[in-house]
Length: 142
Image 1 (cartoon, one colour):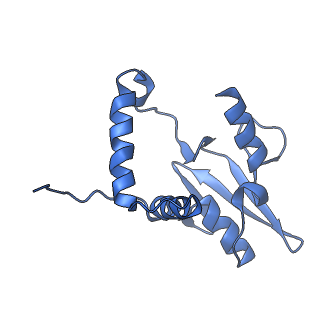
Image 2 (tube, rainbow, N blue to C red; image 1 turned 135 degrees about the horizontal axis):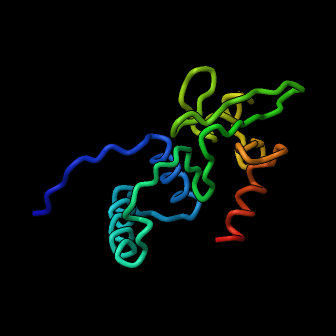
């Protein structure tokens, strides 16, 4: 008999996994995929030492894109700009922690693609940049 424990996972992260599995027509249960991800991390950590050290840099990890603390995020909708900011390890909008997807959906009151709707200005950026462009640039250098 296999024994199990419960591990807290951010709700938005879990729902992103569920959505991803559905979009790929993957019928596995999310819990099974999480176990596979842990096994993958354990295999990778033996040859990727950066996985074993915790960075002192604060910020929000948005899939493959890291947004350092102090990053500003904005979205224009119906002619008005709405703003959020990375504080510590969270995106804060109207005083509350929020994910990028929820931020875009909240601002528009409908389902949106945060990569295509959110613009970011990291502390070292001189100009606002579309999140999708930042992600693509990040993936090209990885």
